[in-house]
Image 1 (tube, rainbow, N blue to C red):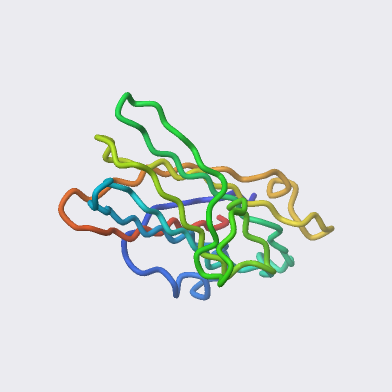
Image 2: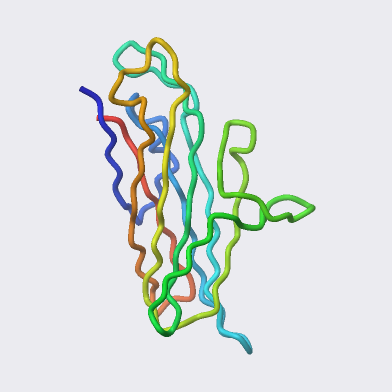
Length: 166
């Protein structure tokens, strides 16, 4: 029976995608603290994914991966953003943080006014295209959540969330 497994890794996990047949995706998150006149927390999110993969002799086609980033203000209310500026395109427009095969190179940029919060909430989901090879247990949307600690010493931190099928 297949199911999803996600874990947080601080090392560079770009090679993870090709290292085993059950590796689905890596969500990369770079968190920067800016302390200009207005202190900000900036987040850049990118993705490496296996859009077409074989799992136990069956072909699986990844449909999409979506992300939301949440950050608490000074009174503890968490604001979630599911849209961001596409940072790696000449015309930097606001778009939903949804990756499909055609836009898999997008890097999404979000920013928050800095507060006393030392964590970000990263919510994500993955969905496959339905086909006759897709096991029933993978037909539902997979959702997960990770808490990312904001480094109080270094101005930036890199995180990777690895998603596998087990």
